[in-house]
Image (cartoon, rainbow, N blue to C red; front, side, top):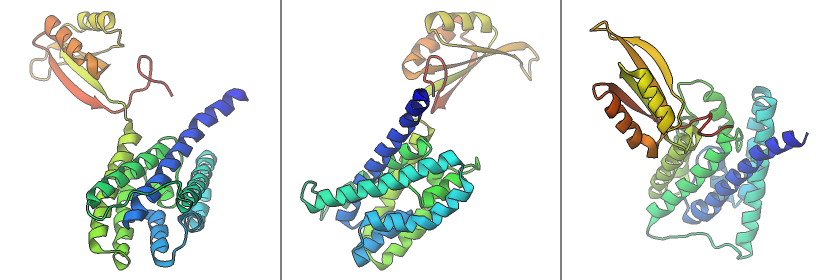
Length: 288
């Protein structure tokens, strides 16, 4: 029981951190500079501009219909994390509203350098949502649709959110100046890139695919000197018809130079393909 609770907390706590960062970005960078957002949150921001409705309340109310959709389509675990995401977002928005009202927090406001506000808004919003998504939660609204659509491998959550955001932000032209909408698109683009980056994994490594005549010797050297696991696969040259070996190994960036040196010393005529790896699970890297 204790182990299960610990595992749940390791997921819930990052979701809380993500929603806190996202709420901070809205109140500290977006609202003070009359920018907007996409999705349901963007509608809540426009309601704040037009009618003065607090973000915490309107965000919660607008999520109810999509919340019902999520209840029918998401798994029980995904729905539980969505409840945590929606509830904590509304809570953090309410706390920030109270802090700003009492003067405990002074939002960032600029009358000239809107690109700075847009960039930092994109960074905070994207970081917050990326953390929430990475740990299986959502903040409701279009996030639920994005999670459902991302189950198809041809589209990412960031792309879905970007598409919906462009449509909803277009409606913002009725309430805010065109120049503010253009700056908002910068923020949304930055946020979508960060969402995909955090989803794919902030950790980056390199995968080496080496085609050589000396695969066993190379694998032994890599295992001894780098202490990395190596996979050997038989291969055959299509033109020459000669038997080859494919050595596959994933290393950290700082180990690339040493691995290249090993390859050159054993088989300088080998053919090597180096690929970017965004996330690595397993012994020697990280485990989830």
